[in-house]
Each structure stands twice: as structure tokens, then as C-alpha cells.
Image (cartoon, helix red, strand yellow):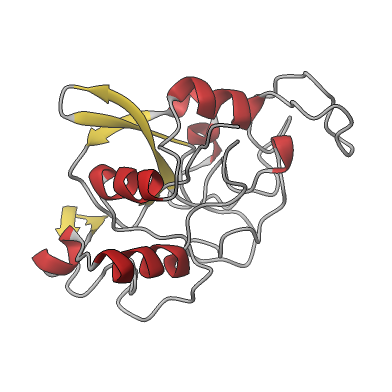
Length: 201
């Protein structure tokens, strides 16, 4: 079973408070945004992703792979593997899904045959940056934002890097496809990257 939405600010805040955890972005003075290269933004953390307090239902960003992994393990799960994430994002597993989805069909986008309904750059969706978790149109398997909104950390490793999937609001729809996945340093944290967890049934 995989989370239907991205892990939210409220969820991560409760975990961090219980564990008395300070994130790297908080310790180091802020997370990153791409400008003239990667630029640190003072005061940008998962609680204040753009320098202002976030709503509890916004996706938690500015978190490293290690921090995301620790959260998922504490919640009784883990970060999804590439295989788990691809199956959930692109292949409809529900026996009787609502239209237009068809059971057992594999789609090019997590939203179906087209990227419509995803929060990507240039979309007329009302969100300048990331959308609150669960507010975009549900896609394959009834999941939200498996494509776009924010990149999501996966378990797969290549040296010191970890795989991210789905693209984000900053990219166009091409990054939503399975071939759009990218490796990023495991200790990287930025405004474009969040996560969700997977659990054993």
C-alpha cells in the first residue's frame, strides 16, 4: 500500500516534534531553490517552504532522502522502490476503477493518457508553485500527485545518490513519465522535492 498523497507539513511536523528532530535545512539556515545554480534561501524549511509559514496540508519539502526515510520507517513503512512506485503510478490495479481508467492498463502518465490535471509548469491550475496535498485530480489507482507537484524520493541508490520520481511544478509534463526519473544526492534538500511512504499489506 502506498500513501494516496504526499507526506504533508503537518504530518512531518508532528513526527519531528515527537522525535525532537531538527532538519538539515533548519540547522544550515535554509533549503535550496534553483536560480543561478542552486542557491540557498535563508529561512526556507519544510515549515516555511517559501520563507512564509506553510499550511499543514502542503507537501513537506526541503527534506533530504535520509530524513524522508526516517519518517517512513517511523510510520511503519519505507520509501517506495522504483518498482513499487512505477506499478502504483502507471498501472491501474483497481478491479473497477472510475472512468476513464481501465483495470490492468498501463498509462504513460500518472494522470492517465495525458498530463491533464497535474500541477506542472504552465498549467492553468491556479497554483503558482506546489499545490496542497490531495488537491489535484486523482490519477491512476486514485493517487494524487504521483506526477508533478513535487519530486518524490525513492529507495533506489546509485553511490551517494538516490532516485526521485514524478517531476515537479517547476518542470513540464515530460518529467512525469517513468523515463523522467532522476538521481539526486541523498543529502540534497530543496523546495521541489518531497516524498510519500509505502507499507506492507
